[in-house]
Image (tube, rainbow, N blue to C red; front, side, top):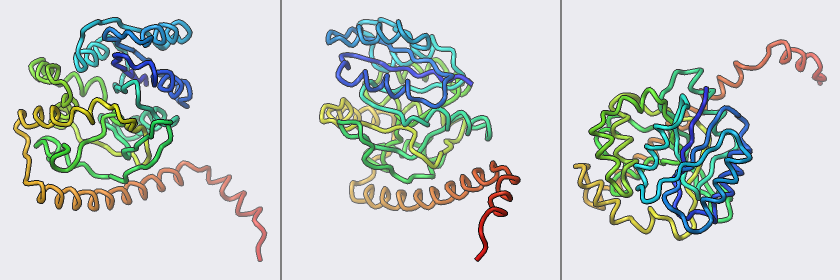
Length: 284
């Protein structure tokens, strides 16, 4: 199974080498990386060209002036993977991310996969992981997962099959492409029309906080775009109460999927080796 990772770049030279390093460190090798450069002037394009020159799985698409979501979709259209994802130039995957996604997809048939949302600091340290194990499909479709209600779904940790993505009609793709910041919010709603979101009990990726994040500085634009889709915005006090309740309930779901993961791990062990260890263990 091949995973296609798209990186839209516009002047991301400061962090782009670290993203490349995290891909080189992946324990799973069947991936491709497509960098879509929107007209960088800070050296990003040269970094991308050097990367594609030394790595056969990487390539560069030069698209000056192309917006964020059109760049992402351009990359998807040019890619050849069975699963799709995108990662901004300032974000990172954990080294086991792709291997975990493939194992889970092949074992369960899941078409849309995420992990526990993580957060990196500017230096690339994973500072925390949120134990969220439940995202009801109906709630995603209704548009409840945004920063004015239950909190957003972490884009960096999302992986979905090409077959699922191709179920989105052209008209719905168009509505996503014209958005500046909330296109992922709308994409999740469209994917939820066709499949549930399966959660892995590990960190696959994280959002990097560094003070110049586009999504942080554009919070008002994001909220306006979400409102325009008809998504609900409860009174702030009610929203805080509901988000708090959701986090606790979702954390209980995380415990359930961790127990399931224990069963998978124990089930994968060789019973002969287990017995050999028992036989070799001194008895008191």
